[in-house]
Image (cartoon, rainbow, N blue to C red):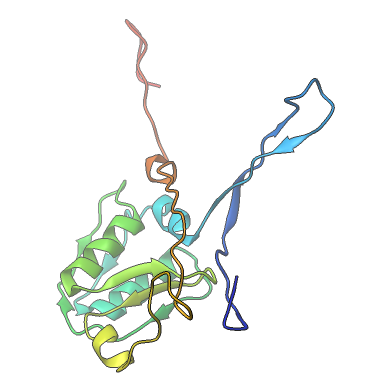
Length: 171
């Protein structure tokens, strides 16, 4: 995207699905790309068996990003001390854990448009900028409103599912 002659990333992520179809009597191929960001990696990373010591929320976020195998992340200093976790149970995924850490700090955990996972403590926003960087609206020089479409698919991914047929055994 471009605004005020500055180019901005809109999304950087990973291809999740690339189904190919031929809707018009096999004359043209259509691909509907489904993509996810680094939250998908965190949502699929089981923290089971991990143990985190007492630390600042920013240190815990850094540890969680590392366990998930993410190569790049950005963490601002968190001010809350998070108590030791003990050994985390299997089936405890990294994304909800990170979101709990962010909520305890009144901070944010998100993936930016460049694909970098970020953690910001509660003090980040009030101290990082002292003036408005833009105005959203319909007037000249304002950042225009855009259509928003949401997807809820990645939140329902599971690493292990057990199914029992009627009269059968769990598989």
